[in-house]
Image (cartoon, rainbow, N blue to C red):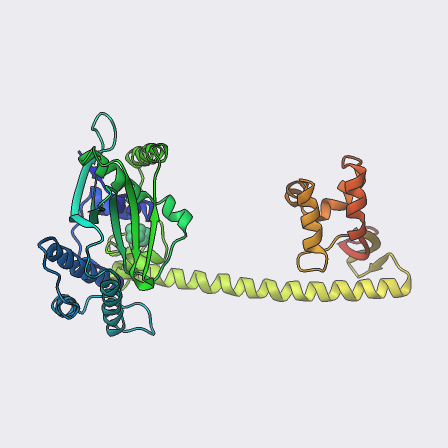
Length: 396
Ligand code: SF4
């Protein structure tokens, strides 16, 4: 029976094929470690050690905590850890971790505002009433205040700060709340707390029973959709850079193997196709520019000579000029005002779907109320348009 987790669902949402490699095929590949993940692991270890000691009434000094962090950093660091930000070094990340622990320690010492019930605790619980789908996750810390409030705490070491609205919808801690309620049914008052260590910020959220039930149903629906998937398509993106399955992924495998004799011929085809497409694009752009310049010349000549048609040896160019109503285009003065006016009258979607060029017809169609037409007409101006149509000479 598969057990789902927040990270398992996230992997599917990022790339279904990676999900298949990791959870269904269970391919064994060396992990790709990023410095952000490395920093997160070291800070979490330090906080775990801190609270394990606090539970026994021993509060380590700040120096001891930082020394624990530094030595864990040294012992675990390896050359495979990816530092992707070109202007940052591993030392920058280490110092950032030290700073986060320092600020956290000074803010919460002597760590007696709540009672720690568990650290890095595995929660495993059935998500559906039949017990056919189980969920699991490790919560960073579970605490309880003197007045009986249970707190599910999550420590974030990244710079990204989600909005309160996003936290109120957060799936991971919402599911953890379901787990805590399953394991400890007497926990009635529960709060979700995120510590954004890089910003020295603590953000909170609460879930109503209805919101929790909706989350449970949404998660079950998502899991059932994953189980119905038969193709597990690739989803290429920047996340591929840290995907450990590139060497077996059909979207990337050829890149890794293109020096092999069996793959070398295709390398030439691809490069040649790329060159031809680029040449065609450039040639088309050149032709378009020449066509535009000739049209302008013919139109100018026809207007100056009072002609409607100009003849070549084999072709004929018919030149028409007309005055048409015009409304402000994107970037023109008055465009935003016109859009706002149409939106106020609930007509913007109608016009946008047709294209703004359809607006003159709409204004004159008699469908819109007269007061709307009166409000829109001041935006109208007249513009002279000249068209040049080319065809074979009809007299030949
Ligand atoms: S390399 Fe990219 S497309 Fe391929 S499995 Fe990994 S994430 Fe998906």
